[in-house]
Length: 166
Image 1: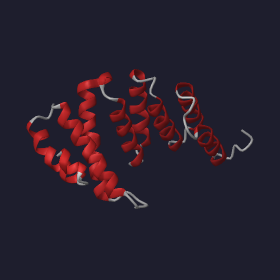
Image 2: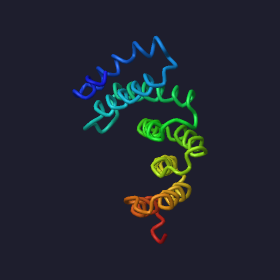
Image 3: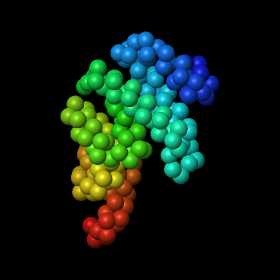
Image 4: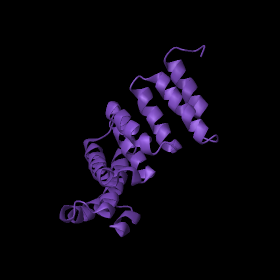
């Protein structure tokens, strides 16, 4: 599977791993690989598209399912990068409330991860909760003073809300 993925075939890698996942649905390593390959294949299917094609939606859901199984098995020990991928998938699928709920749970155990706070801010903003999104980005700066474009994102969101003076 790894060779397929590195050769530019994440879909083939995902399909190859699926047999193993079916045989051992609690194998965390296989689930992580499956989730990663599904996400990469979904991103590939989405490249250059204005709207998410159905194939990408299906692949993103597979990624979310695999990573969701890992989260159920590992909980607070799950790698923050995989948790971030779950949030990004929900954001890409425009399932903002689900993403907000997941981010709130994830940040209870991973509160020092600026990348999680950044995605959390995005989904808060997209769900219309701009003030909370701005506060979340403030937390990003607290954790990572070198974080790029934070003030620009905050300003852009305020302008979109017609709050130019702020």
